[in-house]
Image 1 (cartoon, rainbow, N blue to C red):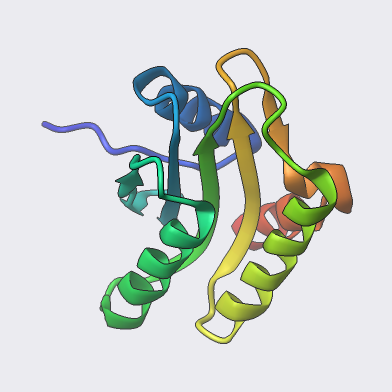
Image 2: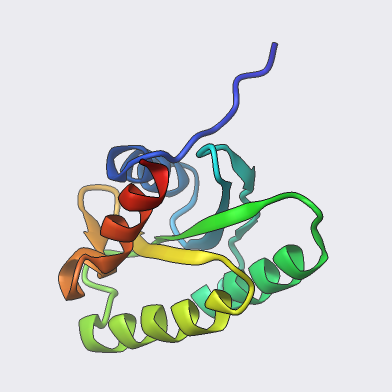
Length: 138
């Protein structure tokens, strides 16, 4: 029996971020999660030209065309140390939340992992994503 990848908590999401970073030095993905915490899709974009927008574009296509019940999304990026831009990253997360709200998907967070540290864009701003995800799971 194949084990399913789950993201039910911030801890699970951090483990996924470290896993992506362990395999890729530069990559972006959107982990698409159903109401039970099962990851429905996690497609990694690892070309140098790939960005978080690449992953968001794929996620929008997947969610729009998939009959399964994707309810949450956690963006994950494997980055070099110090690569993030906190103010700009918060704006990317805010825009993603607006974009996917119309599709019924909560964009919980954008985690960026450099192999040693995981930076949570949600927790660096207002922490709203994880609060909403926790409330939905209860």
